[in-house]
Length: 144
Image 1 (tube, rainbow, N blue to C red):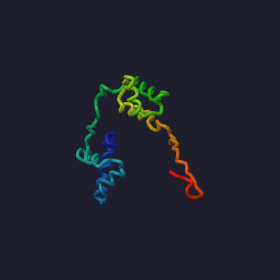
Image 2 (image 1 turned 30 degrees about the vertical axis):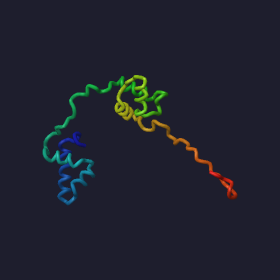
Image 3 (image 1 turned 60 degrees about the vertical axis):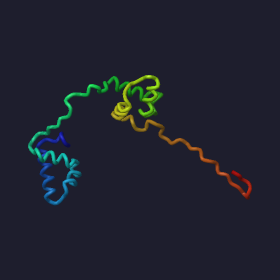
Image 4 (image 1 turned 90 degrees about the horizontal axis):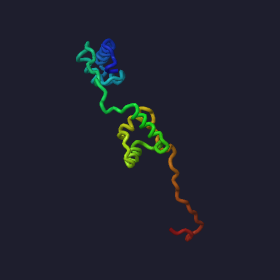
């Protein structure tokens, strides 16, 4: 909710919270039910009729990845060599070749935004060889 809540809805929520607290319900419980933090209610209570003053940053970061760079990250991550590897494994391999596309965090961010981060490795566990069990009929047949 937060900054997307208009003044009228905010006033209704504050009335609900106030009435609930007056009836003996804790503000924390009311906030959990409403899906708001207690801090949001406190902020709204200080300036009940005022428009939200938080608007976020006014400009995009200067080091934001371009769409071409994001596409290059996706191309590399989906290549035959790296399709089953995590960014933690991809970055050192590229660094050994003196190739720098983006940071490991940027790789993770782009893959997560495209829902390509989960199950990048093998899905089935590797077969583990179990030791062979030996059976004996009488003493003295098996020595270790």
